[in-house]
Length: 355
Image 1 (cartoon, rainbow, N blue to C red):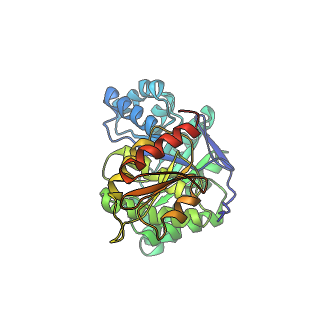
Image 2 (spheres, rainbow, N blue to C red):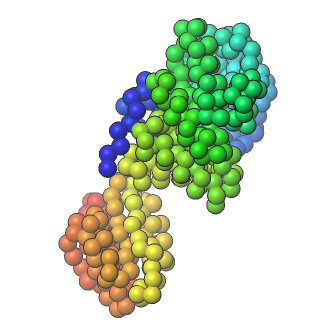
Image 3 (cartoon, rainbow, N blue to C red):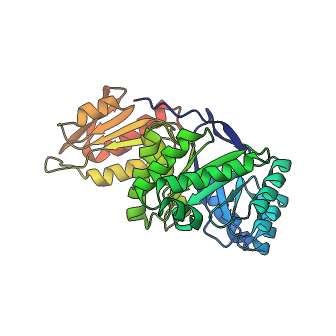
């Protein structure tokens, strides 16, 4: 199924385009203290290797803002400065060479200060992300709408858009987030219906990985399947590398991006007579060496195994003593079950020119 994406305008964050017809990008946020330059650059390097395309750093004081100078120079990924409360930190971050800003209308409420930031960002040609969170929603919006509602979140973001536009600033990206899925989804739908600025998707404070992955996947996917969203960040109480991995899986499963091989494997049942879980894990580990997008099926019995394996680019279907190796729907080998994984990987390497 092809999903028709909402038509949004495009902004440029460093060398990475967001919105328009650009691919949906995967973001994360460093967990280190930004003032610790060495530790932050080390995490950024890990994020770059994992496939993160844009990252955000917390700027909690002037020392963190000053550290950005060296961090930006050493980063392989565009850097967004995350600003709360103090607009002078935004001005310092711009001076330090960041590729974009994130400001929060819930705690940076002075219109004149926001205008000052907009003018400085405009002069340097960097975008601003308007980031509205339910937990820090402007009290005025709460009073107006009788609480934290989709309309309150959307209007807070759109009021900030109007303020920036009055300074002839339109290099804007918007995020409206909450922990509650329905609140996040409905708020994003409202914003999407009222402007064409690119939207950053996420579920804020989604929790530890065991729950946060599920909550984030549901919320982000619901919007993406409706055509809404230009960049995503999976927020987890855990390793930032895992955030990137989950974000990439979401985009891959929905067909928006392809990031290397995909493994299709059955859940196993009483009919399975091979150590399928172990085999699937071995195949997945071996496939980390490949960058090309292709599908590999690892199946454990004759019910769906041959059919699923035949639909994949490569596949194996195991049985008690012997199993089959498939390529593009054709059986190419019969091997002892203990040699299926090895035979599969050898066939993939041979087909890809020995890589």
